[in-house]
Length: 251
Image (cartoon, rainbow, N blue to C red; front, side, top):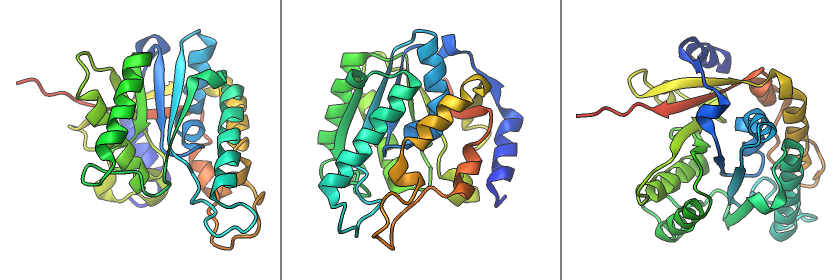
């Protein structure tokens, strides 16, 4: 199972539709600006159209997408990426006051064995206490990017401190392109859900396009730069968004 299309077919084959009312108010945990639009942009737009509150928490500063750009040093790039994120979320119906930037160092978001993990967990825990979402969206626990896995660890550690935890739905970013067989979810591990997003595909695509530093050659002076290629973006050009939810085994 090497191709993203094959992986998608497997998950689509077991996925059931989840209603927006089952999701309710939501917090989206995004490791980098653009993950929110790629992973659940359509669902965000639909939730907002139905009047549900949506908060977005960006974990890293996103400054390692162009680490060697003379014209966009880290601080300027961070400013650009945060502005792009706010524009994307405005398109999806999320107001600026519902967006929070943690500004952890890109590619160095702390995992459970790193310094700074407890402090970052405390930030997320306090944020959860404040917004009290019914559902939290977070990257799939084995998504093949260290910041994505670290963001999942941070969230789960924060949720463990709550008296009443929210529902957690995990979205997929790098599994399609880079995931191995071991990164795929087991059938006894998760339930798969999907949200039809055909009615908001144009909004979702507009939100992705707002991340110009990632989808275009806006910054053209770093030969090592990262871009979201058209080939990669094809994995997200479907009228549905997939989410995974851990199966709880009661003893």
